[in-house]
Length: 420
Image (cartoon, rainbow, N blue to C red; front, side, top):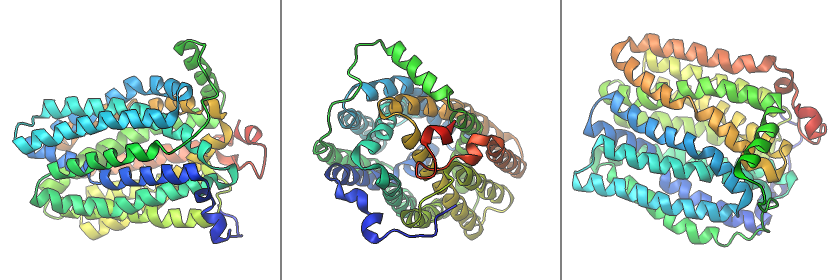
């Protein structure tokens, strides 16, 4: 999985030598820190309005459907316009939508439909941000520092994942969820001027073609790589299970089962972040030689916390399982980013990423709605154990595809040779 030789500390943080990456890293760190409480706050805000898993599933589905509708256009725009500017513009939209949710919660006028509408606005904004970020990161640092750059961003993300849910659990239980929304909006306000300091040359693709032509070129790049579309197909199923079993059933069980509880759920999510954190430290030291092989094995570990959640959702046991799953997920996250950034031409990366996101996200609304119904009409243990088995089977099935199993790094073989 990993090379034996470890880089020096200077090499490990080599990406920070680039001015553009330093400013982007700071802006991204701020938004990750301030936004780390929002998912838990939103979940329990909805459940406070209507203690029904179906209501939470509707809000999550609104976000995801909106994201799906706009993500392909987000990829085209991110290959045409300055990516940092796109991110800044979307942050303005996020400030308005998150701020509106907070205002409704503060005034006691929030309803499930109103939050769902604002979540849809936020989902549309995210559809432009994510492809832009995916295409931007390789522009900010050198190829030899790409894994370190991704690992450093994951390090911050995992750090805030550890503390954010704990603080959110306490804050929601005492002051209410609206304050978490205020903190998130403030972070976006700070990040916008910092991103203005990122100075990059104009996009290589300067327009002159139609949007549908650009989408067709992106599709050709996507479909020509078997490792890419096979894993995206797998994540159609895996993400639907994840968002339903973990994102809907998890908070519902936490709120209605004293063995876990709201604060306990915060600890469990934080333990997942600890697993991610420790793995990012390892990945700063040692480069992945087989990013997709070990990434998909790591993803299969998520079956463990799903099973524990259904069988015996005690805080300590579930936290240990979540820790293991978090470490495995980070191996995949870094490996997948490297596979994309090292094998897809930079001027097409945002478009290809948007197809990846579309395929990975398209079934998620169905997952939220199905699990919102299942968790209230079927035996929770049976639902979650079955979900874990299916999740692991789908993840491991991708390993039979030669390009997934064999893919290496550009230092081991030419990227296109290794990738196809």
